[in-house]
Image (cartoon, rainbow, N blue to C red; front, side, top):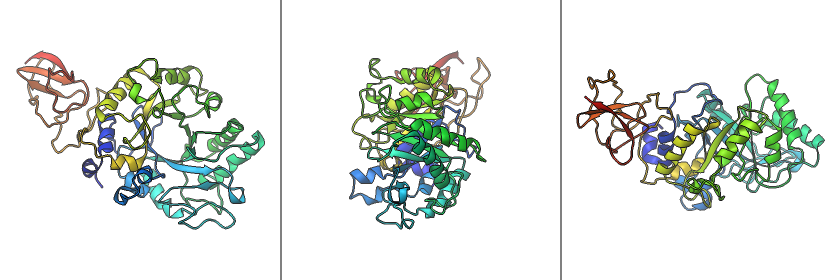
Length: 407
């Protein structure tokens, strides 16, 4: 599926393209502030829309065709210790213990049919990780010794180690995500420290991320975040008072607190903080905001906080089923100095003018998607787009344009 085809299918894809740069396949860059992480595996849309099977979760390869997504945390490894003292994973309608075979003596489903899809995603410049926990996950350790030993288990089953019970076969995932929403933090530091040591000895980069809820400090992984160098945190700005719907309330919205944590508390001062958002109104109990609202939030947060790393969305199935008519089919660059290719049916002008001259600059047109830095003429003046804009006239109330003077 092409990007243009996805526009007709998914409002969420439009949101992503409004907010993040459309990139060609390149190596993943954790230091970027334009990354997009989309959880895959739980068929969240299908859980709340059981009769609409046409929009249920698709194989991961289906979503890997989306050029704007950078990271796929696979959700979830929901039991740390199941039958045979090995974990279990539940990928909803894609792979589970009821519909798929399990390795003998375990409750670990054999999802090795996903190996080629995962490897294709990685070849396209994306990273694929395994997310531990989830809202109903059974996870935790009794002591540090047990936790440190578990690092070897995860390494062997999902990462650079070897085992006869690898759920994804030959696919070597790119790291882990800690989506811990209950239980004790006992052993987490020992587990992650031991795992990081294994990762550092691997033959490719590996990443450790977490998905804390926005109240700071997070009740279930907060002390761990303060003790271990995470690469990124996908802060869940939903289902809480500090969610996206309270962005305009300085006493509630707390990205600044997470930014301060990243810069002054985290053992990794370069850790990236993502805005975690529901991909549709049915993806969370609260916290969903309109595409235009989240576009503004992303623009302003990126401009204000250097720790900003991008956006996390829950989840892929909700994203593709979101057909809200409030979005625009366009690409948006998060930096005003970069010109990107528009994915609307009308091409975005890419001509530029000599300072103080309108020579060679096309007139503004309704229905054309402009990105930050694009120049147009309108009513005899030269204008420059501040950010993504479509159907908002230069000089209009939206404030999308800067007037550069008369032609």
